[in-house]
Image (tube, rainbow, N blue to C red):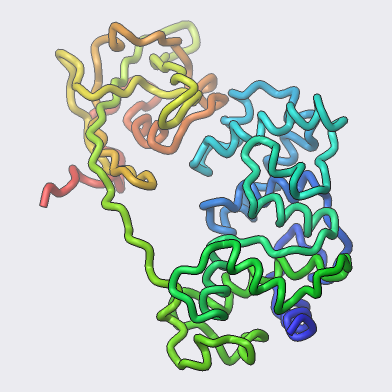
Amino acid sequence: MRDALRTWFDAAARPLPWRSGAGSAPRDPYRTLIVETMAQQTRIETVVARESAFRARFPDLASLAAAELDDVLHAWSGLGYYRRARALHALARVVVAEHGGRLPSDPGALRRLPGIGPYTAAAIAAQAFGVPGVAVDGNVRRVGARLLAEPTPTDARVAGALEDLLLDGTTHPDDAFVAEALVELGATVCTPRRPACGSCPLRPACRAAAEGDPERYPSPRPRATARRWPLHAWLTTRTGPSGVLLAVERRADTGPWAGMHGPPWRDHAPDGGRELGRFVHRLSHRLVEATVWAAPAPPLDADVRWASARERSGLGMAEVDRRALAWVDGDGIDADVPAGEPQPPSRG
């Protein structure tokens, strides 16, 4: 099975920019860290488009550790799940302070770093340091469930079964490809719908394929109903020496969009405000029902700064903030709904 997986991976692996061939030597640990962190809950196409620019801004762990968190959040803008950026910044500082600026190669030591879980530790250890193992993410979990024909196997069960099938329990650096190959297999062949079983190198050992209905596995997890979250964006502008200034605040270090900048958001509308428009913004478990207001003044409890358009472009803002700011033009508040903005959400 191992040789079949290797042959398939060498021939079929997607030509992602951080890959220089499926059988290449271990990769740069820092780049591997950035890619694996960005790839958590983000489409691989987005990672391809963004990881190079992030590394150009922060070329190594030392530069990332020395940066201000606001600069890191700004570079992360648009990727979402900003806790990843905060954890990455914290990790860089720990590695510089405690590991001489070098990522440890041991999966256990990697797991003790901020933001590193079992999957990321195993993936970095394999790709960057040649440590064989199985990194269980959603794709690999699906491969394992079908291999075993088990509806809800634990990650430990999946890892153990795949290690028994593909690794012999000894350390051979040449086997480090297994972790990445399994992720690739789940992403491109053993897909949730219409898996390409005829192309799968593990098919001879797959119980679900033998049953003839691989889509039965794994059992779908109950999907949480997205909770509606009405919020109001207060857009307050004034004219300054550098043009139109907007009141923005930095959010607390906990909660949604922690540490990010943006217009004040509150659970109530401003007194004397003028409604500009509405849109819906989806988070993982919440639907933000945003109403955007031209507010005569910021909220009394807001600690705001007045930022020009140029200054705002350098602040870390979440996508929900940028959508709200579409109502601000060069002359102040624009009363027209920006082209293409969704209308108020249905209450049905």
